[in-house]
Image (cartoon, helix red, strand yellow):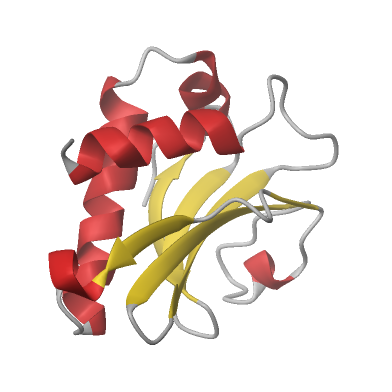
Length: 129
C-alpha cells in the first residue's frame, strides 16, 4: 500500500462522522520519535493568520490515533517529512470525495507543522494563503 493511500485511510478513520463542535480550523501536528515520525490531527476553536500559535488551543484531537511514518520509509530528516505531509494533506483536500474532506475544506484553515514549529497553511476557507 502506498503512503498516500494509507494516510487517506488514516484520516478517514481518525475523523469523526460529523465535524467536532467548536472547531474552526485544523492542524496536522508532526512529531519525531526514535524510529519514526508521527502525525496527529487537532482542531482549534479559531484561526488567526496573524497569530502563529492559533493551533496551540485545542478543542478536539484525534488522539490516540496517529499516523506513523517510519524512518525506514521516509528517512530521518525533518524537512522532507514536513513537505511530504503537506503533499499528503493537499492531495487529500484536493481529490478526496469523502465527506470529511469537504468539511476540512470548509473550515477556516488547515495547516501542517511540527509540534512547537512554524505552521504551513495548506488551505483556508477563502482559498487565500
